Each structure stands twice: as C-alpha cells, then as structure tokens.
Length: 171
Image 1: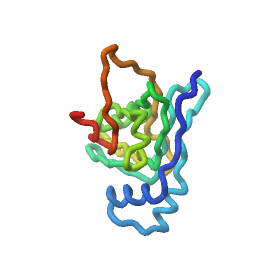
Image 2: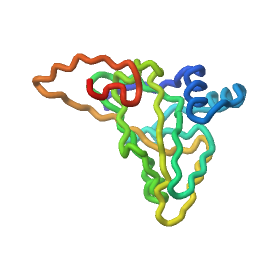
Image 3: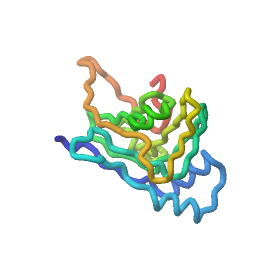
C-alpha cells in the first residue's frame, strides 16, 4: 500500500477559534480539555480502507437535528490524492446518519488554507424511525478514504487556495 498522507491536530488557537465560532464562547479550560482529548484518525483493522474520525464531544441528535462538528484534525496529502469523507457504515445503517454534503472532499491543498486545513463535519440524524442518536466523545462517527485522482490532458489550473469551505468556487 502506498503511504500518501499524515494526520495532525490543528493548533489549539485554531481549534478554540473554530469551536467558539460554531458553539459560542466556551471556557478556555474546557476547550483545552476537549482539544487534548482529540484522537487522530486511524484504521480499525489491517483490511480497513477507511480512517475512523472520532467526535470530540458528546452529541445527541433527535431525528432531523443537525450539528456542525469541528474535528480538530487536518491532513497533509500528497498531490494527486484526495480524502473522501463518509458516515460510518453502522451509524448510517442504524440511524441514517448523513453528512450534509453527502461526501466530504478534502483536497491536498486544503492543508495550507488560512484555517490550517481544519476539517469540519456537518451531520444529521435523518432517521425516519424516530431513533435518537447518542454519540459519546471519542466515538468513531465518520470515515475517510484516500483516493487517487487524475486530471485532463489539457488541464491548465493555476489557482491557489487561501480559504476553506467554498473558497475555490468559480476560480
């Protein structure tokens, strides 16, 4: 297997800024505890294609409810590869847990964006059976799979990323 990437935590300051932007002000000590408890993504077994991402806080979602999750994670990916994000299969099957963008795409240049490449997940409990989804902090909730990609023979892209979500639109 080809090794194409490495996971890191974003800085504490970036995590705190993004956490407060998402959930409002939080005591710095509590934010530090959350940050310190973040686990880097990892595969569960030798045969696993996906790297499990772990939710940094307790989350309860009733059917139809959504939450944006600052993961505290960034990834340095080789050119020619992308990280595709999906809900964990079991959570999708049991609760219809959905990523709001259906499949998250993490480009290799996102690592260098102005938010340190901080990855977020916006998840929804799309249960039509009335099931309440409870995720304890540290639970694997989504998975990322590295995929190689190609470009057209006449590709002349020269744009440079500066931001995060939506920063490459129309460029």
